Amino acid sequence: MTAPSARIPAMDVLRGCAVMGILWMNIAAFALPEQAYFNPAAAGPLSRGDIAFWTVSFMAVDGKMRALFSMLFGASMLLLIDREEMAGRDGRRAQVMRAGWLFVFGLAHYLLLWWGDILMIYALVGLAALPFARRDPLSLVKWAFFFFLAHFLICAGFVGTLYAWGHAAAAGAPGHVGAGFANFIASLSDPDHPAIRSEYEIYRGGFAGIFLHHVALFGGQWLTTLPFVAFDTLGFMLLGMAMLKGGFLTGRWEAEQYWRTARHCFLIGLIPMAALAAWVISSRFAPLTALGSALAWSFPFRIPLAVGWAALILWLFTRHRGAALTARVAAAGRLALSNYLGSSLLMCAIFYGWGLGLFGHVPHHRLPLFVIAAWAMMLIWSPLWQRRFALGPAEWLWRSLARGQTQKIRNSD
Image 1 (cartoon, helix red, strand yellow):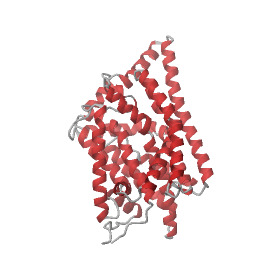
Image 2 (cartoon, one colour):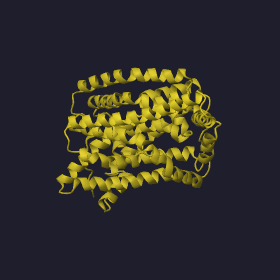
Image 3 (tube, rainbow, N blue to C red):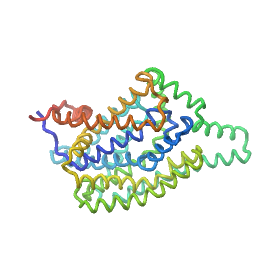
Image 4 (tube, one colour):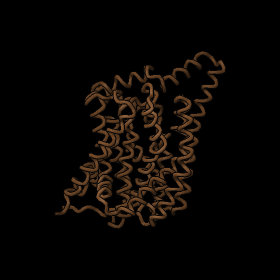
């Protein structure tokens, strides 16, 4: 029987918090049309509770948990390479094999379940991060911010192009320009627009229709949106490598250092995020204001907030290492891939037509109930599984395929 490999408890706790936090942000994309992910008004009139849910998500969660997950992925790459090389194997080849199979997992996830998959992005961007693995922490931080800048310029340029389009339409450009812009804006905000109504029809329908829709999306939308997520993901992976080499992610810092870092990062990030949220709300969720804030203008503040979340979680970890809840969150983190895919399966079964068919029937302010229920399930099943097995089911399959052999996953008695 195979004993579990050495783990870093602090990183397991961070990973558990990240996979739980990602579900909070993704729940709107499971339950509502894709357009509502960026502009909640696309799903219909908003209550005060709906606006409160959006505000909390936008300020504290959107992009921050994915950033935390990306940092941990980058750090895990280094750990894998070191572990493989210490065992006399080629660490880089092992990472390439894992990335290849992770892409396959992500493609299956995308086509069979949910259009918001991040595994394919991690597989591709992880390969781009490999050449940076041996750099020193300062160099990694510099490269991370270079890619952050590239990401911001791409997103800001796209949003700026939309504003220019709108100004041209308002200034009396040829009819097709104005009509095209009006149709685009309606597709982002009008619940009765054909594009949004089509989302309801597809996801309230059967599995075959959803599958064919995802096949079509992969051939078009997924490829075109890749540049909007690749560079920030790469930046956070490199930042995670630097944070591992500096001892930050391993829980080696003093509790007070983590607390000071968290406090400073949240002060830097939350105030401008609150101003952006107020701007979007005061605009009555004007499409370009909501899209621009979600896609571009909030990005610079996601960086300190992602680091702040990591520091806050590690501060709590250093103070409550032996707590029962800490152990449960760590177990969820050790089964992060299984929990990520399992969350998608559960939510699709609840909201899609081939399941309970609740798509579009649950208002924003009630979505946290589904998230909290899923968190409870993660925190219950993960420790129970870990008592008997060294690896989660998805982790076991991924590692076995990457190594070309089936591994036993039961723990030693």
